[in-house]
Each structure stands twice: as C-alpha cells, then as structure tokens.
Image (cartoon, rainbow, N blue to C red; front, side, top):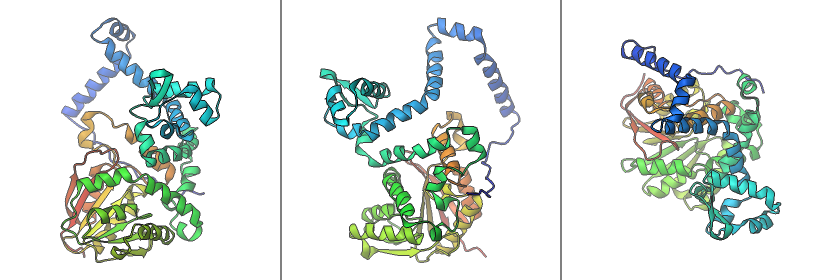
Amino acid sequence: MGVNHKLDLASLPASGHGADAWHDRFLAWLERLYASPRLYSFSLTNPLTRWVTRRRTQKLFDLMAGFVHTQVMLGCIRLDLFKMLHQAPADLHQIAARVNMPAPVLQRLLLSAVSLNLLECRSGARFGLGPLGVPLATHDGIAAMIEHNHLLYADMQDPVGFLNNAWQGDMAAYWPYAHDANAATREPQDKFSRYSDLMAASQGFVIEEILSSYFFDEHQCVLDVGAGKGRFASEMAVHAPHLKVKLFDLPPVLELAKANVEQRGLSDRMSFHPGSFLHDALPTGADLITLVRVAHDHPDDVVRQLLQKIHAALPLGGVLLLAEPMAQALSESYAGPAQSDAYFHFYLLAMGAGRLRTPEELMHLMAEAGFGQIEHLPNAMPIHAQLIVGRKSKCLP
C-alpha cells in the first residue's frame, strides 16, 4: 500500500516575546530544578512536598505500564468478565469454571483489574464490578473500540518504525476510504460492513453530546454527510420528529443504512443519496448539514474541498454542525496537556491521512470556506466530541 500523501502540520503557538519569553525562562528553570538529585531527595524527606514527588512518580510509572493496563482491560473484555459480574459478583473458582481458565492464572488478571478500579473485591472473597468496569458492562461501544484497538497496538509495536511507515499496517487496511479515494469500487462489501458496524457501535456518546447541546427547532431538513449505517441520523430523527433527514455516504455503506432505517420504522422521513464527497456534489435542499466524525479522517485539502461543497449545498442562512474529537484548544493550554490528544494523534496517523485538529483550526477552515457566525459550542463531555457551528451568510462567487 503505497503512501503518497504529504502530512499536514498542526498549528502551534507562535514564538513569543515579552511575557512569553519570561514564561520560557521560567519553564527552563523548572526543568533544571526537576533534574536536581538534591531536590528529589529533599522532596521525599519533606512532608509538605513528598506527595508532589510521589504523584509525579506514579504518573510516570502509569505511562510506562500503560500497555499492560490496556491488555488487562482487553483480557477482561475477551473473557466477558464485565457482563458476567454485572450485578452478579462471583468468587475466583466460580469465575474460573465459567471461563475455563486455571484459577492461579486467572487470579492475576482479577487482582490486576482490581488495582485499576475495573473490578472490586466484595464480601465472601468475591469479585464485582468497580467504578470503571460498569461502563464496560453497559456500553457495547466502549468494549468494541477496546477490542478494535489491538490493530493499533500491533502497528505501534515498533513506534519509530511505525512513524516511518505510517499507513502500512492493519489499521490502514481496516479503514480503506481514509487513504484510497476509489475504495468504494474496489473493496468488498464485508469491509464496509465491518467498519460501519464499529462506527455505529462507538457513536452513542457522540450522539448524546450533539443531541444535548444543539437545538434543532429552527431546521426542517438535515443532510448527514458521512452518515454510515445511519445511527446518528436515526437518533436525530427520533429526537426531533419534525425533521426530514437525508443520508449521504458511499453506495455500499448506504445499503447498510437502509436496512437500519427500515428496522426503526423511519423510512418515510429519510432519503438516501449515494456518492463520494471527493468526487460528487452534495445534495441540496437541507437547511442543516451535519458532519460527525468525518473531518478528522482527512487531510486539510480534502476538508477544505468538503467544507466548500457543504457551503455550496446550503441555502442562505443554512447551518453546518461539525462534531468530532478535537485537540486541546490553544487558548486552554494553561490547563495542562490533554492526554486524550496522544491517542487520537496516533490513531488517525495509523488510519490514514487525517489528523486531530484544534477548534481554532477547524473554525479557520470553516471561515475559509465562507461560513460566518462560527461558534464553538459548550458541551458536557468534550473528550467524546466537541461541536462547532457556522452559518452561510452569503453566497461565494
């Protein structure tokens, strides 16, 4: 699988002067301080500073052990432990009999899961769900993504080799459309079904963020670009019964969406428009176009082209609603780094030519395409997705 893409560079803070220069000098001083053996020894003997050093050491250890932690979680999922123990605690020997695994080996997994708050020790030497295990028992989409991530782990076994040969691994093969503009005509139907199923299963939290943060009252017709199996479109239609909904995606994907829409009894309110936004114009007639977890799959030039097509398809006053995970806003860097950014940076690199963008970058791309009144909407759980809206206030020449 040859790679001809040139990676886009993310926007970074410009070199500063004045206050920024003082800040750089302060950070350099802190770096020297952290490297001092004398300070380390002092911080461990001083009750006022010991907790800071212990916390920083624990964070570094957690980074080192992170792969083991994820494998513990994956092992529990593959043995179906979270669903097995949901509202039904059991002891070691009961669990061992159910999963057909020697008790001494299984105990290592269970105790590791307890240490990660995935499981808890209950009375009678039983194991039950911990606070982080409950969502894994009740939300199939989380478990599906954790299982799916084994492709990313395999690609990244040699991180330097991975960086020099991105888009060559199993993750890129899983998402053919992200790096092959003609995938719809070459790939078998089961490949589209596979990734469409994953997208639908993992989309629940994103849908909740959108439906709880945006009001659809002013709209009559919505076009969902990159609709997949139609889960978001269906949930939106149920949430706002007055809406007519159009679904746009690759032809083999929309065949999967039709069955889902029919099963939910929404066929009379939905229409299907097969095509590729890389090659085709978008359907007109919608006063709201939604772009959910699409832009980050593609490089800047493709996103620019797509936003221009969305702008052209909207009437005056029409709205674009863009929702996807975003990098930490440059204006929020004072709060410290967002560790979720690391996951998405590497996931999208392994997947294809897309990248994680800040809200400012996406808002700039929308403004370039002609959108005005661009807003970054607040929402409850930004780690799942953030929302940006823009309005078509004028026609471009």
